[in-house]
Amino acid sequence: MTPDPGPPGRGSARRATVPLTKEPGPPERDVPAGERDSGHRTRRPWSARRVPAALVAAVILVAAVAALADVIAVRAGRPAAEWRRRLTDALATRSVDDVWMLTGAAVAAAVGVWLIILALTPGLRRWLPLRRPADCPRLRASLDRDGAAALLRDAATRVPGVGAAHVRVRRHRVKARVHVRFRDPRQVKEDLVAALDEECDRLALARHPRVAVRTRRHTD
Amino acid sequence: MTPRSTLNRSLLGLAGLVLLGGGLLILFAGLDLYRRRELVPPDGWPLTAPADVLLGSADRTRWSGQGWWWWPAVIAALALVALLALWWLLAQLRRHHPGSLPVGGTPPQEGVELRDRALSDAIETEAGALPGVDHATVRITGRPTRHHTRVGLTLTPEAAPGATLGALCEGPLRTARRSTGLPDLPTEVRLHVTRHKPHRAE
Image 1: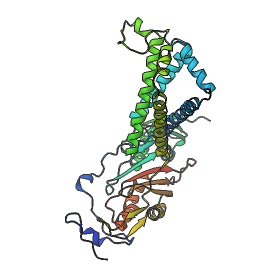
Image 2 (image 1 turned 60 degrees about the horizontal axis):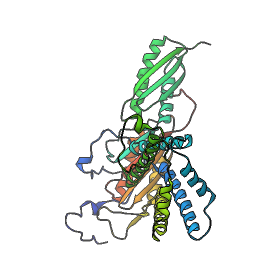
Image 3 (image 1 turned 45 degrees about the horizontal axis):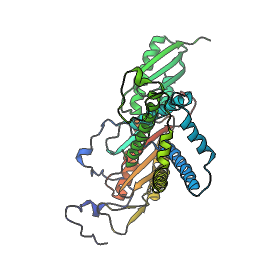
């Protein structure tokens, strides 16, 4: 293989030396310096909003095709479809203070507000963004909230004195409800807060959540 | 944001504005808010009084009284709307795959290509063998020049997500980067944890 004479400036020395093997070797620092901000706070990824877009597109498609088919049928000399006659009759006879018109308008306005909210908010609320590791500047990672709750619940259960633990993870808060079987509940609570904080570090969450613990003495 | 996300969000926002505007127009007229609030709608405003109807007889005669071009224009407009909606719908269902990736740095070696499946399978196998990982799925999407690696990991209950992420970056992803010579792989990692009963074991 002869190295092709690329334009000067584009060809880099790396081209010839890239190994096609899979042994681990010395780390390659081929990352632009500007992007290598390790520990940079990861922002939540934005959803592509595929499902709402597909739904809205499908509704528009069905409506347009139905209207098109009926307009063409009428042009071809056939009578208009039943739904079209009823729709035009309703629109022509029901005044805008009719209860059906008002209900329809309110529903349309509400759906409109909902679509605008969908368009402007990031979505993906189920995912907690994680800190990116130092060596992978273009990696974005997120952890399922249910998964985080399961791991935190295990961490809480490991604290001595805890009988049963129930952990809810919200986007900025972690709430743990635990039954204390033995030991002083206040002591257990302190241990729990420390244990949950430590587990949050192990989770590598980009934003450390606030941890709230509620203990209840277990009564059989 | 990806181009698709921008497109979807713009069109969703547009549809939302149309629905909200139409709904408010009817609500304002139907609840007679113009008179109660002493607002004066501008001339030619479509609905102003509670007794108005959406489709007045004046509108109907005006529309049917247009020239020969009216109905062909309506049909063309409806067909255009239907086609655009179909295209928008298909854009949601379709997912681009690069097919083959250039290998050997920039500019790529001529004649050497790597199937995207081969690379994602290699990453998947290596990632699945990492400690604390129960199951891994890797997919490479996008165009050859702007491809995107999506990694889904299911962790065991004993795993530490931070450490696993570090290991993923040091291990499979670095190997992929080194062996393809691609400068940087934009990667999105989603972590799950296997469902399990509470357990106390260290």
